[in-house]
Length: 486
Ligand SMILES: [Zn+2]
Image 1 (tube, rainbow, N blue to C red):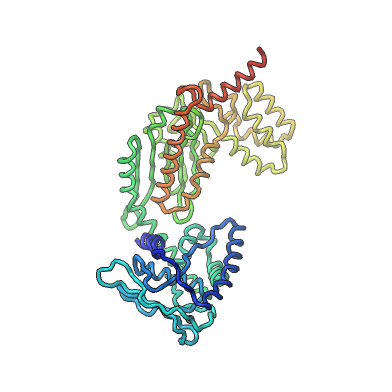
Image 2: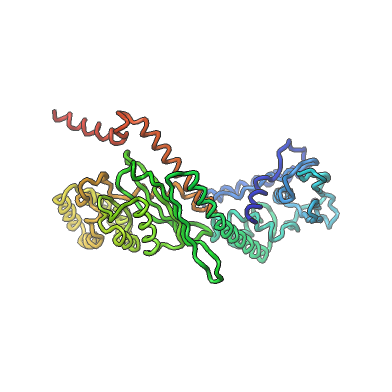
């Protein structure tokens, strides 16, 4: 609930209106600020981090706000912008006052906003905007909750980066405000507490979210599983969404992989992706589990098996990395499936063992693409001649499980790598930083947009509605080759 309030607050900071003329002292301060701010932005960009975004802190008499929190946020922005030593003087449910306590309490700056009568808005009814003080880095209004709110989103994104010293440094460099280490410590703890309660709140909405998906997306399957914690409460265990449309329209190949979730949601996102007739990515199912192990993989593969009616796996292909839990789960659930291992992962592992072997990549991919067993043994021999230790390590990866020469006939897809799932993981990268339900919703939207786009492409198929674009390109390519021999 706390987080929802904060989001509302940030969304509704204040209602825009033409900005008032500012006094000279404020203008002087503004000319100093951008330089500092640009430096910080530049520093952040180098590290590929987004800057902390705040409002402009502009205030004027008559300005209205959706609530008291929005007003306080605006005053916080003003304090950050001007480095003024503001202090809150009234905490009533329907009125808030801030004064500047600089110049030994003689500075006359103050702002007062009440919520009057039936008016749903809070309005500034008193605003004395002249300072006689000189900022000295102190700011009384910077209590623990205020600092926590400033850093909340950043701590959610990168909790290990926004540690105490970093928070202290940003406060000073960006806003010229001095905060103590214990203040930062308490603020960080508070922000983490908010994030934690937000996590719990999200789970309480999970069942509603699941029901909504089922209702608005016919052909979907949703499964939410909870377990009892030490005090007998239901807590999240796993969540699963599947779209049944895959079987009717796609190739019988499923790529599976897991990726870590970021921030507070400690867990893994497991995904299963198919290929449509045009060999493009088709999201089938995704799931969130607390840990990635054999049991969780078996649960996920079992759900795919039941919901997609895969039987013992005969006639289907699974593509994945060489994750032990996953391999075991597939053996148990789909014993007759053709399980291809992704050569990209194999190469990644071998490269770590043999970093100086420049030809490893070429030889390994040549081996993976071997068209028949003769070519396979020739390519293997070439690797042996190149380096016997590399050959030994290649053999340990069971190359017949990732080489094209050993694909079953009628496999409908000759891929030797699981690149579609890597690409999908990249597209949902931003979603993985979000709170739980928001993350699931973003993944769902990305999946649905992708499916809709592919449907449009297939409708515009070049030759007819029976031959997809990529297939047509291949046919055209082979036709050009054969023409040369005629
Ligand atoms: Zn002042």
